[in-house]
Image 1 (cartoon, rainbow, N blue to C red):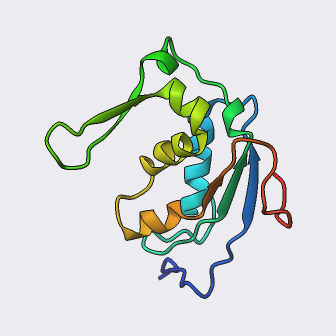
Image 2 (image 1 turned 180 degrees about the vertical axis):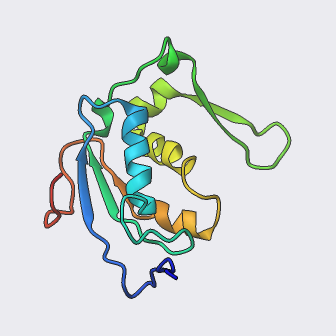
Image 3 (image 1 turned 30 degrees about the vertical axis):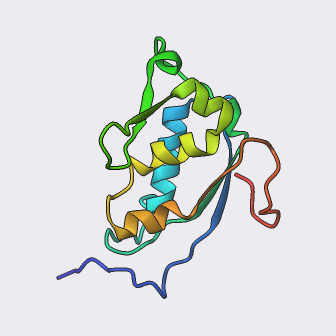
Length: 140
């Protein structure tokens, strides 16, 4: 009888992955990023352990968007809990002013809604331009 091996935190090797978003489709890029953050691309993936890699995205403001009018029509909402405090931001404004937040919001939706998911999201680093402070990391 064979048993599935469960990875322990000591056995996990976390790499750094550098992804250039220039010319890539936004949704497909976010799917790839979420897979790397969760660690589902590794043979020792365990759902209750953080097996994922660190992901650095550069040129975030140069990603492509598909869909008829998605940039103009899609809105992101936030609410503080007080009456009448709903705020909305269009996707075009987020892409121009804060592409890092746009990438984090989209990736957060694909990760678990638990403490583990929040820990995975902290391993995502997004930069609008080509420069980043993680100089010793390997390019993909």
